[in-house]
Length: 121
View (cartoon, rainbow, N blue to C red):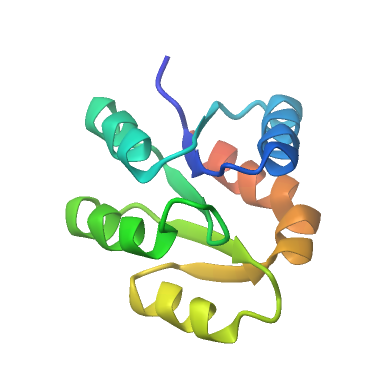
């Protein structure tokens, strides 16, 4: 089954939160622990949204450049620690539609996924 959302997240807490929220909203999400895994999934089918944890161990900002070069029309939402203003600037420069603090992402996750669901209609 094609995933509606691909998430580059290696934090188990956020992987679980994303998967549980996806189940509640009826959105198919596939999590990837590395940029290469994310790009492999993108090669199979285009998601409607990409979510990136900018604090992932796998150089997520570099992954953003690869993602944007191959999939410019896919919106990207990224999250990070609220004090990392330079990292947020780099993510915006790399093409992220939205960069938000982890707490805001966690709070708004159901809304973000519901927007993906409403695009399916």
